Image (cartoon, rainbow, N blue to C red; front, side, top):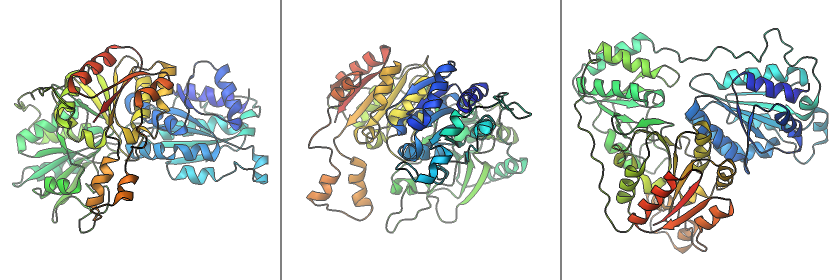
Length: 521
């Protein structure tokens, strides 16, 4: 048995059952091992950013790491953007990164690079296998590190000779790495944090409960609603969240707005903010003459639970401490928005989506400017999960949808994607066709980087000239999304009105396999 085979067996023995791969020469022994050890699901992607983004989506929905197989430093470089997003989302991801054979590094061949240095920028843990005999133990450590709550990115660098070298035993350590380690659990929030939060909520004055991370599932959301009803506190979520359960019957708070002026206005009334799985609110970017911290001057911040702590239990304990565990929340059920005929606008697109979301669907939202109001408009939709681009590096939507579909094969996936962001990772469509994944994608085609057009004014660069405007335009030529999709094996159509969008969504969501809709704005 060689090192690559011991690696695959260790992955499977520790519950890593999917590998998103774009291999090269240095990874051929790993590829051969995947063939000989047939239990691993191997998913071929055409770009490493899709591999890492799909692993992120898989992890968010399954709670378990998938593996990526990346080719040397350049392959890792192609994946860095998606791994940045995965790290910010606190997703468990395990990278297997091939390298030259150790004796070949001295020649500084064209593909030689500082893989460990690059990996360190997007990983919590990096190790290079020393020889074939250590590969299994190294892999077991990587899996354990990736699985540490709430989730980490672990990168194992596999030199080619460590992959092809023979080992006397696949598991040469005294503790066989094929045996799954004890599952990682969240650390409990100290009772002092719960008591402090309860004391704050008993005071007079405007208090905000800001939710993120593990606080965005049905049970902790219900406790947040009870706490708000009992104390008069308000509840918001972070600007972008990794995963949120929502829909009819589930408490669905608003999020902090993305535009900095709107965010400042939304948080201005609060003198105390209690953080449950959320980070202190800050602006995405610096703007001339505007603060980077979104909470108002003099506002105090208190951690009920950090992202690494058990947010769900902390909210349950806080509700008990406030006597709110049995509070009946009397909030009326949100009304389903009305779809009006006519041209596509933000409001009627959101209403159309709300009516079409299937039960238990997974919605992946990278709709950018088109979708600023989608969360408000879809509160009354059938229960679903909502995933967003936590790290802000665009191009996440299509890979996230790909990985989510593989993690949850019995659930419909609806990807809401802007045309500019979608062009970062359109190769995802090919993998969706190859794997026959149940993903319906809506591309919002406004033929420009609309968010950046707005940002010109926000950063103090108004009245742009022809060249500046042209740099933000996706005209000359327009992207023909249905034709692009068909070239990758995905059927699709273009629509220009609300009724045609509704029909196309109904068709795509009732059809097995991938389907793409270009909504021409």
